[in-house]
Length: 609
Image 1: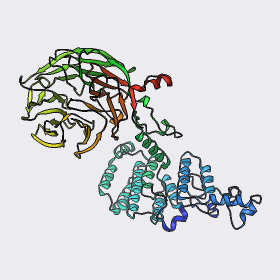
Image 2: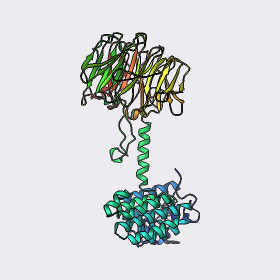
Image 3: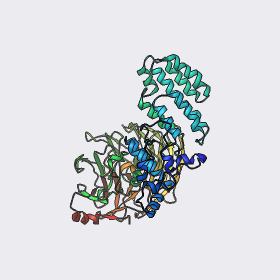
Image 4: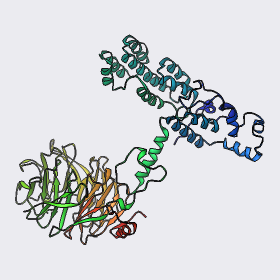
């Protein structure tokens, strides 16, 4: 943090700690406590002596004859405050002033020998809040010498005059407002576009119309406080502290602690009232979804895929047993129950995709499957069974964001765009597709192919470009909600994170066992801060997005974990599908006593040590 008051030259005596003689000086703003900066008239008397401040040569002895020399020396040393200590005192003073504890602020400034802000800044603040615009404009001349940027004066003057102009208009003083616009604002030759906008407000028929068009609170404390906040940004902190500086620092500290917390998985509340400032922020691993909540055993063969719906209310699982099962998520208990079974997928189900509105679900099969099923999830009816040719391989699918189209393809060179009835809209020849994803713009489709790369394809202008190039086959990939990051499962390498915009490899995550099986990883948790992946060593691995080492290893499956899916609405709910024929639902530790909860740790290895 930049130390306040640096580089202020001759003004440093006004901005740092003052001797006790200066403590007794009255401010030019009078003896009020309206800004919390002014000392009471008796500050140099008995109060000062009780604080140990000397008022002159020998005054310490006469004022406190019982004080020993060592005590006086100790008190004198307290006056030698470091720059950091002065800053803290000023921050406390500003905070107390905001609470209305003005006498306490006066006493703090007097006893410490510090001044909360420059006296010229105090006058300026008062004149702005009282709407004395001419005086406030004169104050800017005094502040000019204290500012780093000469151009800032023009900007500050513009803001002052703009407020003055709007207040005249609200009061119905159109001629005075016009004079401000023509005679004061325009000659500044600053932000002429804004001046044109301001001139348009002259046509407003009444005050409410003006407030609506100008997006302005109107004349009074609220708009003037907002104006003062803007003006303060141009003043060095040694002259006037930024508004609510202590709250800002505390909020930053809380956010930083949350940011560094390995297991923080809830929505960030920017209010300081929601946290304790007396303790560091720590999330327990027991609050994290790494304990088995439920084991779903209704499939009778390997489970190849699982995916939560976009609204988080359902889970779809696909299996080698030729069925898709739709599970309903209880919003209170987060338990899953079987909703319906979709049958008839002769080759098994290796990939599933929910439509953006969760009305439809598309199911694909393994490499030798030439068919694609489009189900109405609400009715359980098959809307479309699509097959262009028995020689096709349709193993992957992705929905267009409009919900009216989808793209599908496979490793035999098929790459189609279709409507909901399975009609072929476009095709791209010669692309051996491994995995697909539609970006949010509705035009670009990402496809990983057999050349160990991900390319972007535009079906509108038939252009394509290389985005990601790996050295080993890309078995699957998924994209973050904002479209910026891609998570790749790379054969023999594991899980890689790519930045699609900058086209760079961001991170390689360690721990997972990845051969040439297709394993699907996912982003998840609040703000997608976490990454989860299945593994051939029968485990589920979880990483914090910014760390290469896993923060949890989830055990329980007895064969390869093919797919994981994190609930997009419930951050504490995770599902995994395995060749052992089960789907495991993971959540926080149940509400048990401490000994029982510790006994659950075999399900979730702690990896943060």
